Length: 100
Image (cartoon, rainbow, N blue to C red; front, side, top):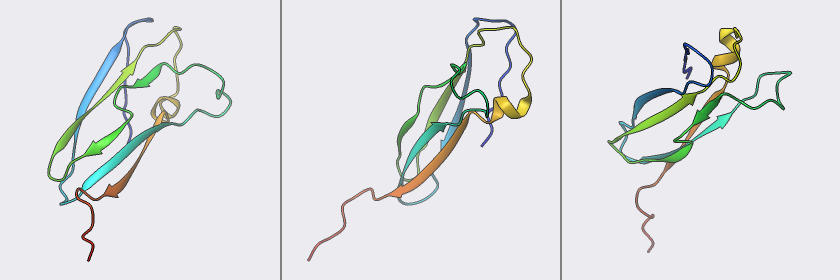
């Protein structure tokens, strides 16, 4: 998934919110992980994920929130901006398995 954000200045917090729907009959656990741009691994990222991990219950939706606060006035390549987060979802049972 790519989350694109733009800003009209530096030190301005820009928020992007969207919903993720779980149409299945089991809960899904998700985790957003920061993916640094090559050559910029040690720099502070202007991107923050406010909902970095959680569980989306079966048949429900969950709001994801990202913030972008640029600290310098610099034009960045779109590929660098979009390579900030990667999502991985794993199924999670909503109830424990039955034992006999």
